[in-house]
Amino acid sequence: MAASAGRLYLWGGFDPRDGSVSGNGYCYDPAADAWREIPGVPDGGTFVGGCAATLADGRILCTGGVDRAVFAAALRLPSAELGAYLSQPPAAYRFRAAAWIFDPASGQWSRAGVSGRTARAGASLVPCAGGVCLLGGEIKPGVRTPDVCRTDGLE
Image (tube, rainbow, N blue to C red; front, side):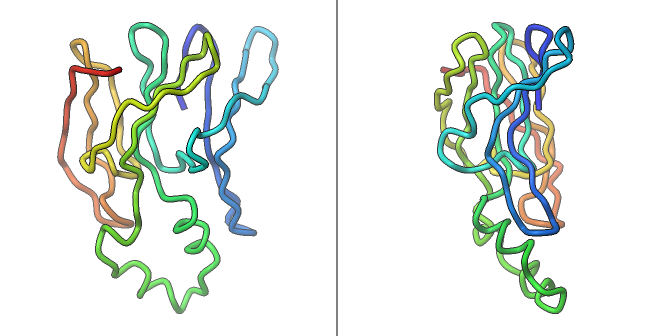
């Protein structure tokens, strides 16, 4: 979720009751007190657990989050199988390594790059000195990292 030009932008979500995971996008306009659907996550994934930051030009950078299929399957696991699920190595969860930029003015997505360093869930992303900083997050369910990474260059 991020704000740009007085509007709120949101992608992803899930319903733990039925295990559904969404990649849909929505924009809330407080002046109109209305939501509208916008282009969803461009690769069919989700940004559940991902993070976003509004860049100086109003575009929105989105990184990280869970893999849609892996997370949906985990939501449907019986409680007796959760221990085995949580004991897997980080690569098994396939947290999202692709970073995407959404342009609210055009309603279009562009891929900003791919990095294993941004494949985190529950991190924070903040603009800083001409770039962005990614702070913390999980490298797998329940295992957080204190790592911070910074980039100056974005497409």
